[in-house]
Length: 371
Image (cartoon, rainbow, N blue to C red; front, side, top):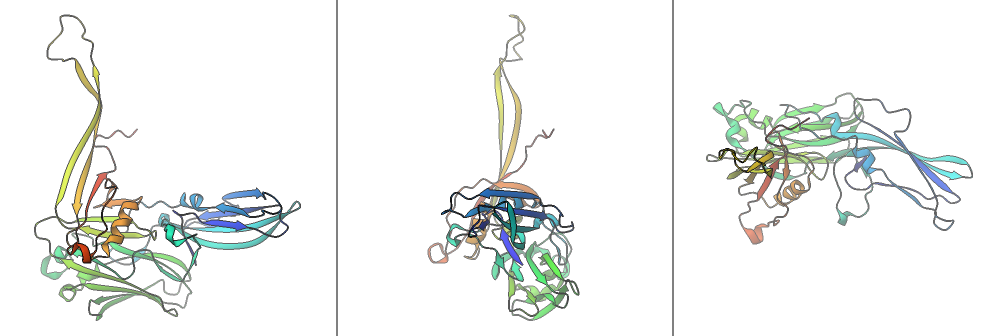
């Protein structure tokens, strides 16, 4: 599997001795649909000169059109990610010599809505069989009010999910194991048994509470693929919040997968309103004094919410950075944008107790003006 994060440029290069030009054919499709017979896009270029023969094509923006992250999966079991959360794309490279195009390569890729950083350098596809799309070996928290009546899951809240993508053969086994924080396994589930292909999964933490009181100190979830040494781990810990109502934040992170973060502490809700004021012309000099000389038109408003994480681990600086850079964010399944433009990334050494305050704006007008 060749994995590409399409929020950053992914460059296809053709530089063959003797070429006078090149072209690439780009085929793009989603899981659940057939690979197109004809190319979705065809690009061609001529060389600049006989000493500058390199042609470069950036395909990321075209692939990104086929990815639409709308909502994450709240199922109570490991389930496939939405077919629109990722896509396939195939690139065929050709060189042009004389009037003839000759195929050079034909490579299948998987695109996700993530990004690489400047410090990573030029993006190359990541060749892997098992790749986390949420943070690996991360430490996160969830509200232990989900333990509800008699330590039995009542389905009142969803703890959220973490996601990964895997390429497997029919005889390989992809296993998700839920363990107590001290590594004592409680439950295992095999995914995609007897089926070969590329699969993207969202794995919920609901077995945390299904296990009852044995998970009172936290849970470790492990994903493995038989025959390879790669392991994905996710650690979650309960927090008792008796004063405030926790808010769940789901967002697309740098890896292109859904990430879940809880804001536990104080929240502040605000409203801002905009309109246009016009001076009115009275109908006569014998005007009514209750009408006034000014009136507002096209009034509408937006709501904002300021949230606090509460005391969290130092690794939250990565989550906060990804929230600020994310294009898709949901608060309790309601779409928002980030209003906070900057924040300190805190460390235990300097800040001791770490809390982040982030302000969000709901991504719609209060008065329905959709036409």
